[in-house]
Length: 168
Image 1 (tube, helix red, strand yellow):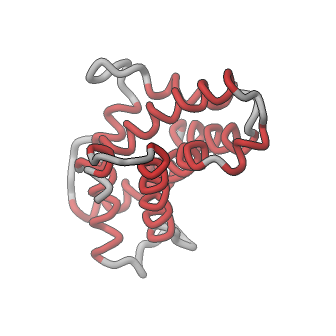
Image 2 (cartoon, rainbow, N blue to C red):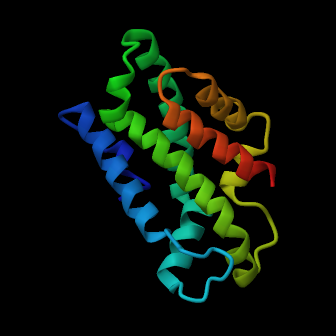
């Protein structure tokens, strides 16, 4: 569902955002480990989820959500300027979840990658560390833009945490 939901036809544009947000919440709940140092209690479902989100078609969907999220945040900042809307808005909450999920995946993926013995970088890593891919702007620059917006401190904090995770 997650890899293809953005291609479906919707009667309301908010439905698309809501489905994406709900999928992200499911992934985030599934990947919430108490201790990421050891993956003793993980199942094959956890491994498949991480690999599909980092390497499969779901990785592209995550990146599209990040790109669309940056545009939406800029649009909301220009149009509204009201920080209270950011707390309730599914589009903004989705951007926060994407940033948190990518951060969590970057933390878990190296441990799972050693289990599956892949040598190359994932789709997410390739896009994060390249200057431009598929006519897309630099993803790190987009994440930095989330840091500099002034209306949502939680979005800023989440972006900072992801940048810290990337620097490791």
